[in-house]
Amino acid sequence: MQTYDFDYYLPKTVEEGIRLFQQLEGEGKSPVYYSGGTEIITLGRLNLVETNAVIDIKTISECKELTVRNNRLIVGSALSLTAVEERNLFPLLSKAASGVADHTARNKITVGGNICGQIFYREAVLPFLLADSDAVIAGKNGLRKAPVHQVFNRKLMLQKGEFLVQLHTDQRYLTMPYVCVKRRQQWDTGYPLITLAVLKTKTEIRLAVSGLCSFPFRAFEMEKAIGQGGPLPDRVQEALRHVPQPVLDDVEGSSGYRMFVLEHMLEDLISRLEGNHP
Amino acid sequence: MITARLTVNGEQREVAFRPSATLLFVLREKLGLTGAKPGCLNGDCGACTVNVNGTAMKSCLMLAVEGLNQTILTIEGLKDSPVQHAFIEHFAFQCGYCTPGFIMNINSLLKKYPEADDYTIKEFLSSNICRCTGYQEIEKAVKSLLKMNREDRAGLQQDV
Image 1 (cartoon, each protein chain N blue to C red):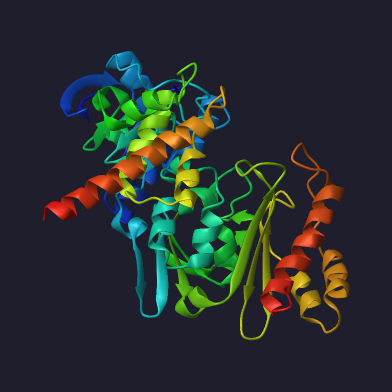
Image 2 (spheres, rainbow over the protein chains, first blue to last red):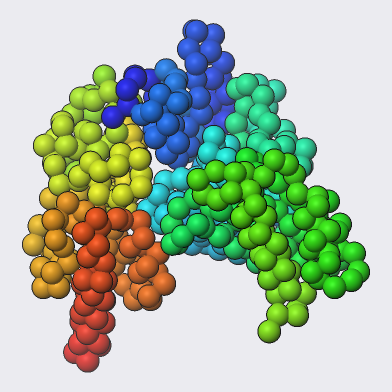
């Protein structure tokens, strides 16, 4: 049970959603967009999220789209993570999504909700960072499309009243070799110690990380180090020098332990993609 | 307050609730369906699992208002079902608190994946926690149902 009340709105179109936000704000309310709603419900119960109006975007058709059109994969922000996993049009995304929470929770957690959430792991963004995807964002001036690298810096940089509608990814990336591994402190369920996603393009190895710092990131500097010649352990050591600081030091693992795990994950996963794995 | 009809266990139930009320709260406190259990209230334990349009959902993670125009099934709607019989045969419960959530999740699993492999079974079952740690018996109950389904299908093919 929520400890506070809010009104619930279910717009049918992007325009209606945007209009509702402006209208509610004009009335002195503090509206939030709602997709799966799991974080609004759970954090709301703890008074960590407070709102008096939620705008549920899950009946907006663009937010539920999952298709390949004009050589681009279109992923609607209100699709549940299991919906994306089951269609499996982007195996790297399926794999990253399958590490979030548990199967039943993923029936409710959405792609957009995970990416825009307060809980900082946001693993669903990793494949889009690796594939140089575009984000389609709705705001008072209509829809805008921007490279995900431009709008995602530690978190999705939305202006007030905006919401994420879709993510577009070049079809070429859907079939590239990848590895995505989530290491936890123990067992198979729980928050990650580190999630590392690695994509191999024709020219380079790309890296994206969650759980290492208090934000997910595409590790451009680390990629450059990995791309240099030389034995893999040396390249990994060089890459580790470019890890953003500070590294998390919490109940899931100390910063030293996280770096130790990252080192071995890098060696293992890159070795697999470079074809040197036994 | 909203006054609306929820379709629960094949019945239309008119009910008044606040838009911020979770489905779990409305099922238990407004409709008297106490089979879905409040556990963590945080989406972790799975004790409150119900089926919405055949999909397992943690009712503590869902607003009741999201259940409008959906088909909701709770443990009360599965009376005398094969899943319940399998749980009894395989002693797949101890204190029983987590049992409705497990059964609803397994009901969804069997409908979606009638030939589920071990990986899929584990994926589904990892959504629920049993403090009595009766996992092996629960897994046996699931596998007995899958086997029964296979035998039923084989029997049907022979009849044809």
